[in-house]
Image (cartoon, rainbow, N blue to C red):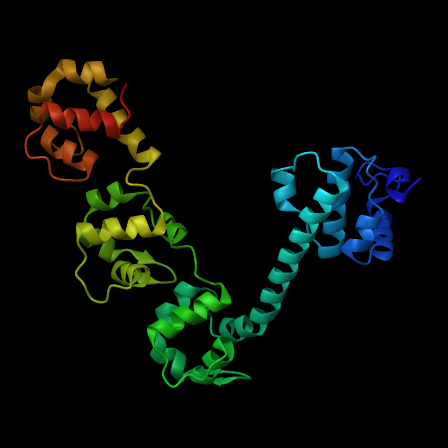
Length: 308
């Protein structure tokens, strides 16, 4: 009888988790050691449990993709290949973490914990700043990128960010500033966007420059749409759809049928607080100028607001 047959790898065993942990760490030094004990008579659930335990104790974390996407029933050979691939990826990630740790420590000393924060500081700040034990920014950047840097530009900073894996979540930055979609930007307007703070980036123009790298182009509706697309926000979010539908319902429109029964003439003359008359309301729903509300505009509204 093998070790795995006599001692199931589950948290509900008779021995404490700590005792099992120590035993696994002691007995299975490598993945191959573990695989040689894996009996083909174990069912899929037992193999799954054993694999999770091995990685949890050897690499100090559980296998997330196993937990959320349990593999199909596997033979010993299939499971061996699967686990070896995961082990290789884990080792690659560990090597990346080991590489970046001292460089991140040097950046964090200056309050820089992400790519957006580094770009906000700028290349001039980077060049003039001392990063012990590497020296000034050019020497520091050279150590990170593995080549001698004569000049540090914004593009070099982006290379540093890529190398350290600290690009930052611009989508989260925009969500935290109250922007769930393009529609919100369109309704609020360019001036509102430019006045907003987007920590750690700065104001709206700085955010657009970082994400799009478009230099000093003026902020337009097209730029805002590019920005939203680049960070992965929707054209119109579910919460915005719900807000518009609520306004329609307060004005007697529950679905497509009641909207067309009211008609385009009624719609364009009606006041939809706080957006004004129907022409203005339609523009805010659709995110573009509509002129006068027509049958076609009502069709667009039904499509955008998912009115059946």
